[in-house]
Amino acid sequence: MANIKIDNLYKVSQIVGGFGVFFTLIFFSIQFRNNTIATKSESANSAVSALTNWYSNLGNDKQSSDNLYQFMIEPDSLNEEEKFQAIMNLHSLMLVFQNAYYLELEGTLDDRLKKSLTSTIKGAKDQKGFKYYWSIRKSNFFNEFKKYVDEILLIEEQTVNIYNTIE
Figure 1 (cartoon, one colour):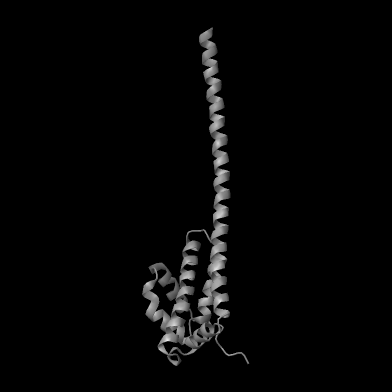
Figure 2 (cartoon, rainbow, N blue to C red):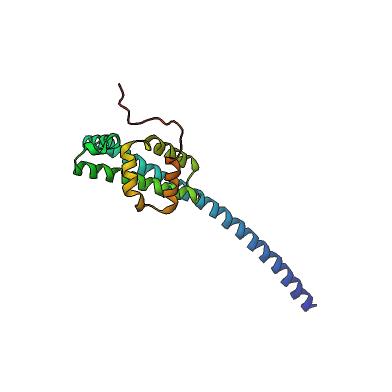
């Protein structure tokens, strides 16, 4: 009789233990999902913040802004120091683009941001300065990103020239 009670208790404890494991797994999956959402949100915020800072800093510094503008139109119109400054400004932007590209590939970043970056590159791809920049700095990027940019550069569609003088 005592043996039957112990056997029943054992069976009940197995059932209760199974439910405990089941509910623990559900709890962990919910926590994992929430953590993934928070990570994606932080990554998106960080990428957008880096882009915003780059544009804001460039826009608020007349010399840097003028240098980059002139560089994109005609790189040879600048002296070596100005050209170097423009190349470094453009390189910092392209590093942000590369980071966003990889975050989107791993699924951490929404693909709409990649579309926005693609559009930005399309707007600059036909400029002498961008062509010059890419020819001398391309080797500094990861292979997948180089291929991505090279594919954009081959697109034949008409793009808006963001460096046209507004009259």
